[in-house]
Length: 360
Image (tube, rainbow, N blue to C red; front, side):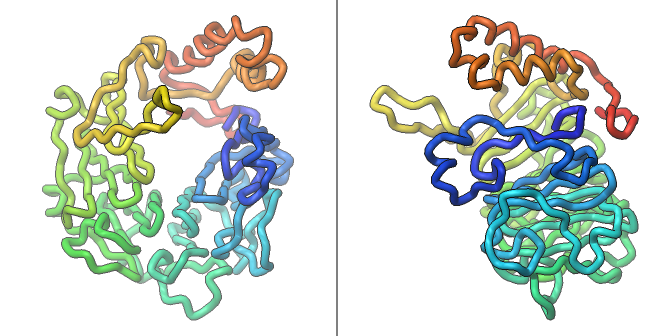
């Protein structure tokens, strides 16, 4: 997302051309800009990506989807895919103000200002956290009793499971897979709260979902993980992070990442490497957190971000422009442009031009 409220997308979610031959022909291999006009003229404030669809929350609190609709993940009943973003309006969702969103492979979860969680899509009902008496094409709110009066603050989703964090600092989980941390392999069709003893009484502040694992970050900066081979959360400890504590976590299908207070990046899992001499892709399996070389980020420390300035947005546009990018005659500017973009990491706080609020 840029400060002007536009969104840059790349890959199979770019412009929702999930099954388009043009995407694989390379026409959309570069990032494409989605302007504010695609979201009713409002800034995009939250972006969540599924396997072949994209969910965006605009500054007015509405949800917009585009992409593949094979499993009703776009939130409307009409068949077929959608190449342009449209507002999700089922069950009066367009009249509510949404503050958080998460996407699985083919299901979605959003959170409104009243603390209600809405879900739709999915391969089956297990991903939705509710009984599907009605069509899963239409967003439906989980019942108020689903979280036992706990107020949900944030959401995270993996391919087939979802995590909701409440005000009590204890995760609610539902879905399929051994990454739920409930102590067994059984799926959960409704939200189940993990007991405080699972985290030694620590207050959980963030969650990130991978394919068959989930990361949790507690208030003390310790990282907990549940995997398909483990039925309960396990604390990684600060020793694996060089004695430092964590400030941010992220996960994808087969990879995990942690940013420490010292601004260092640690990753583990299945990581892709540059192609070998014979042109084949290679992969490396790291079972323990490995520190990334700070040289990759021009020596800058991670952990703090801010919105791009006008000059930095111009530099980004130049770097991505087909006639001015690294593939052009001006490729000599590539290093300078990247260094200019990476300077954003040096400023701890910034102003969101769309909402006027400070972001970290």
